[in-house]
Amino acid sequence: MNKYKSFIKNNSGTLLTIAGCIGTIATTVLGIRAGMKIKEENLDVKESILAAVPAVIGCAGSIACVVAGDALNRKQKSELLATCALAGSSYSAYRKEVIKRYGENVDKEILETVADNPECMYMAPDIPDKVCTWIIDMCDDKIPPIEIQACERDIIHAEYYLNRNYILKSEQSVIDFFTFLGIEDIDPRYGNYGWMIDDCQVYFLDFRHTKIDENTFRLTPIWSPWYDYENLNMFGESNSDYPILPFGDAL
Image 1 (cartoon, rainbow, N blue to C red):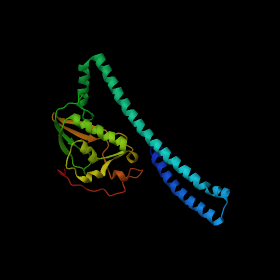
Image 2 (cartoon, one colour):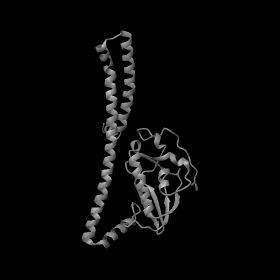
Image 3 (cartoon, rainbow, N blue to C red):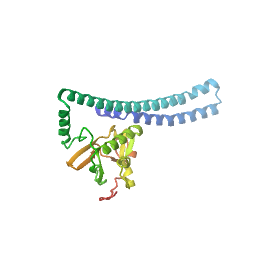
Image 4 (tube, rainbow, N blue to C red):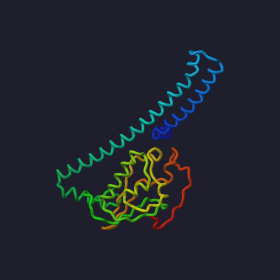
């Protein structure tokens, strides 16, 4: 039972949209039947109104489902933005308190220690401008890792714009991310890989920044991109076959 409740909660916007579509079809059928009945039986005004009541109720229900689904989607986006803002505010407040109590050197030492952890998201507090080799690895053997030269500031900017557009459009492709990273000559088939809020139920795209050596870093997504992400069903399953892309320097 809890599984079904969780499914309904996580997919309530989609379910309301489906209900609205079904209601629209039902309204059309009921409207046609009402019109045929009025014409065949030559009903008066009062009887005609009564005959049209089911179609009117169906129309009202369909509109209610569509409006409610849109409201839920807007609420989810607002909650996501609020969570991001709260996390950023809390992080800034924490760092200020550390600096106030122990000084800037301690704050820097803590962040540099955390940066040495392979699981850390960001390497340093000042977002260095040093150009290094970044291995962009989507954690999918169908998308070969790509090496680029960039500074961490550029990487973080690309992640920001990816998430900004992801929140506004509810979907983004691997090509979108590679474009923000400044990668050129992208294999167009990579446009089949990406993320979609409604079906994937992923509301923020996080990435790991892993330090390999002083001049080399690896970027990997917490959530690997889905193939055929635009055609996923409500269970997160693709309705298309999974293609095999060439290995090697495809880009």
